[in-house]
Image: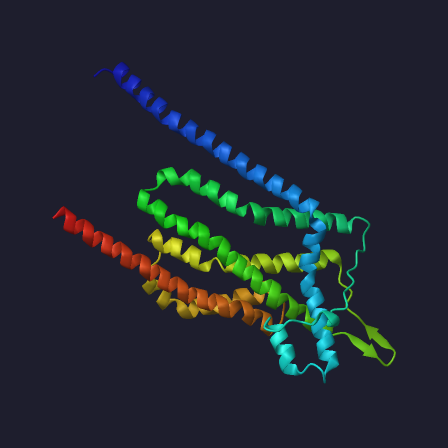
Length: 299
């Protein structure tokens, strides 16, 4: 074969590989357009309903005010009732929630707060669409059994995020804000009251929601790593003590500086780590059974 023929074959290979690459780039562009469009639409919807969304996020502060009123009542509401209300097992009476006042110290502070809140809500609402587009882009490169194994994680991820966010909304935030209100000082000519800025409150809420929601993705991340063969259940069992230390360090970083908040995040994460070990073990067991069936079929 002469050099000219070899050169033609080489050019044919380049052209053959170029076409699939262009197809992938075109598909990637389409997926990205869908993701951006979904975020834009969700942003518009959130901005149109930003007031009820903001009032929904402020409700834990109102509940904290009710908890403080229950604490001040003393005789009518005992300490046990207060504890049940703190962990979300007892409803705070509507009569105890007198309402709160948030401060806006800049002319456009509330407007920019609405923008940030709408963007935050848009990402959360559009996340299932983004995850589905990501799956549709990588699915053609996966085997059928890999696609079937990947689908449960698409369902588990938003569910775990909602569980973590619910823990923040119904337990963590009321406790943190109740603790902050308990530090007020009134008496002997001194009055120290909590006057929270709108932007600071929203930053606290969104930070805790993201921190808990993303932290609760631990079983998904470790299970995917186990599915890819990067880790195994024995490694997770051996590294349990180090993982527990890392969990408490993470909880100390992302939560307010009080032990209750840190424990509220650390304990569920430790339990989720144990669940992750069990999930990875199930993946290993299923893979071993499939290998044995394949060997039996080949023989």
